[in-house]
Length: 259
Image 1 (tube, rainbow, N blue to C red):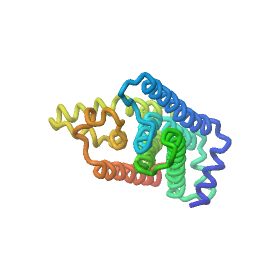
Image 2: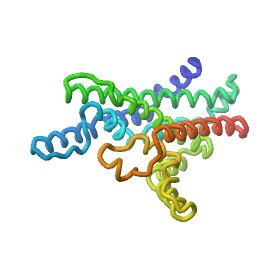
Image 3: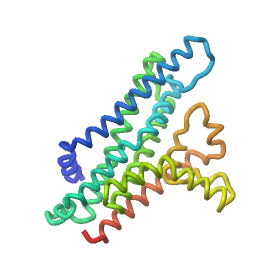
Image 4: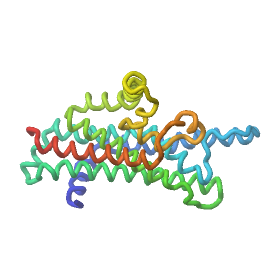
C-alpha cells in the first residue's frame, strides 16, 4: 500500500495542477472564512442580534465544514485531471507493462483519493481550531464530528470524480459533467424525480452528491431548507454506500476494459 502511494506521489509532486488546485482549495477555505468572520464581527459591533455563521464553539466545526463543502470541486477536478492524464499519455499501459496488476493501478488511485480527502479534512480542522480558540479563548471538541463529515463528503466528491474519469477517459468532458452535474443537473434531476415520478419530497436527499451536502447543512437555514431530510445516520450510510459503489465499479471497469 505504501509502495503504491509512493509511486502516486512521484507522479504528482512535480505536477503544477496538483499544487494549484490544492492551493486554490486552501486559499479559498481560509479567505472565505476570513471574510465571513469579519462580516459577522461587524454585525456584532452594530449590536444586531443575528448570527449569520457562528465562529465559536461548538458550531465552529459545522461552519467550517459547510464552507468547505462549496470548495469540494477543486479536489474533484484534480482527481479527474490526474486519472485522465494516465489515459492521455498512456502511462496506465506503461504501469501494467512494468508489472502493475490492473487492480493495483486503480487501487492506487483510490488510496490517493483517500489521502487527498484526509488533507482537506486536516485543513478544515486546523482552520476550525484557529477560529474557535480565537473566539472562545479555549479549545473544545464539542461538534467536531462535522469535521469527520468533511472527510466523508470529500470522499463522495473525489470518488464520483474518479468514476467519471475512468468511464470517460477525457478530462474536458469529465470536468464539464462533474461541474455541471454538481451545480445544476443533480438539483434538476432530483426535483424532477420527486415531482414527476415519485410525487415525494425526499428522494432528492439521496442523490449522489446531495446526500453528502445535506450531511453538513448551514447553521441558519437548516430547518427551512432541509426540514424533511433523513437522519444523519441514514445519510452517512447512503454516502458510504455511494463511495463503495464508486470504488467497486471503477475497479471492475478498469479490470475489464481494453487498455
